[in-house]
Length: 153
Image (cartoon, rainbow, N blue to C red; front, side, top):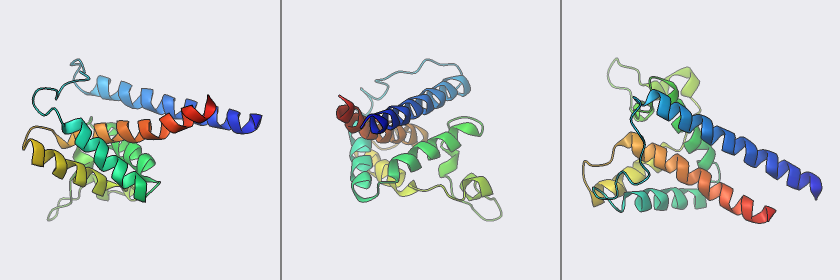
């Protein structure tokens, strides 16, 4: 029992560290502007709920979604900032970032596509794909951490 709790705690510590690293990278690479927890509160108030619903629906069918979304967000932010470029498809003779060898095993793109469609239905042209990816990664990690924290208590 004690080793299971220690393992759960070390897993949570690792996830928390990853979140801090990704958020720090986002702030450092993102141009230095202050981040806001309620950025879309007025322009698209239901955006975050729509993204969370898409993530929850995907997680119910595929338990690898949280890791996939966190990794997608990391790969997006690692190359020239968090701009959604990892979501772009190859076109003609232009090879997309997601088709490069380091990104060959990325997955869960469909979750972002579903979230984007839901958000676009609510408020077209308001929420960026990069923001949807960041929200989805955040929500996926939160949906994994909450139950784990409840088991420890």
